[in-house]
Image (tube, one colour):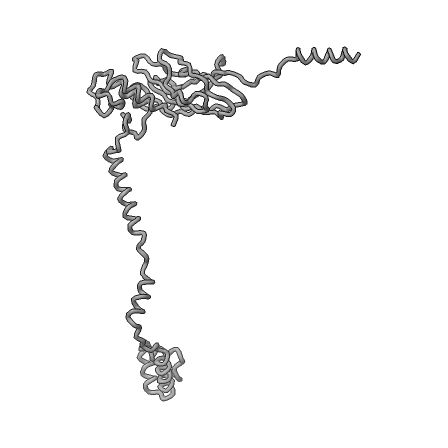
Length: 153
Length: 136
């Protein structure tokens, strides 16, 4: 290396990043050493002074910076509802709709037909299909389901 | 001459035909076409603008008349349904109901399939067609 170090090399030596040759030159060369010392003073002058922030101010600032958690209860409720809906669909544990024989969530003529077929076949029918509340499941319940399916609401 | 003209005017006002009424009674046949699959149960909603036509009656076209809510009469919306547990069931283009209307304008009738099933309960999607009674 011939000549003096340029300012980038001197700043690298100041930051402890210069090559061994550059550090050696800065140590031996009075001009470069003076410049290096000037850089060190400048860097020290630019370092922010330590300032103690009062605890209350720090707490208030952190409180403002902290993300709000108001959505958490809503998210929990939504997750609960989604979970319940999943169980509902997966297990068929839907709320009973009187006359919903095929458990599709509504009463239509297919329910009346399904119950009529069950009654005609002589199979044991679910007492829950006693939609007219007369204590037995028979053709009158079929008629009642059919009547409900065509009701103008 | 004046008396003669007055007499003729009086005569013409008495004998002039009354303006023709715009009220018409029409019947629509409702068909469900299931193709080759027998039709065991069906449910159809029929709509029209009640200011143009009102439902005045439902006629059964089979042994068992279709189910409907009497509250639909005099309105523009009706739900019709029927089923059969008989062994022999119709297939293809099946006439399922005839609905009577009192038309006072130029109504547009809109049928909507709500549900249909084959024997055993398998869901069907027949095409629904409305034909003015007397048509084909």
